Picture 1 (tube, helix red, strand yellow):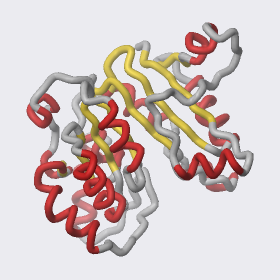
Picture 2 (cartoon, rainbow, N blue to C red; picture 1 turned 90 degrees about the vertical axis):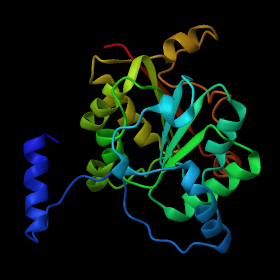
Picture 3 (cartoon, rainbow, N blue to C red; picture 1 turned 180 degrees about the vertical axis):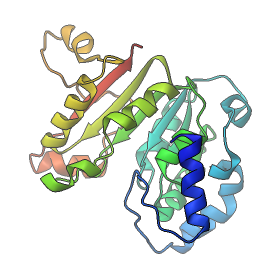
Length: 249
């Protein structure tokens, strides 16, 4: 969004007019448990990041120059906390609009003794635009986003050319955009969108060539924990597709 467009939107909203803007989510309200509320009260002051803070300096936030991994839509945060615990040499930032999920993630992080994790409770598109510095991320993760499986709703899928371009500017050169979905049609859509740009390259060929495999997908890397949701899917015979593209321009 340009400054002029943003000013127009803000002016219209100030005048009480409704302006439809693109969001990365469908707002889901949920009731906080006592434990989630306690975690928010206790840990948000040290682990929470606010959209209103604007552009962040990760070196200041984390106190080091370690690589930064950003996850969009971490749900209840179990796998994000596990990743942060397993990789203390990296810093993790999670974005989630569902407040109970944020509370659960904070509670899990405390139980696991994780200190290399910070969270946003806000829309990912606005966080990317306003808070994340260009070329500050080594990895962006998008695991099991809403598939919007009905054809007429495909335009609502978060993986679209404009979204990918917004990610590109935030990733360092050689940085990776890692997606995973349990909807084959969405995986095909993801590949189609990513292949439409010359600024990213599918790294499946590099990974699969060592195993003499030919595929546009990769096996789930050890760095991505197997979730309970995914384990259930495997038992039911459901597939999961991991896709990894690196920034080349």
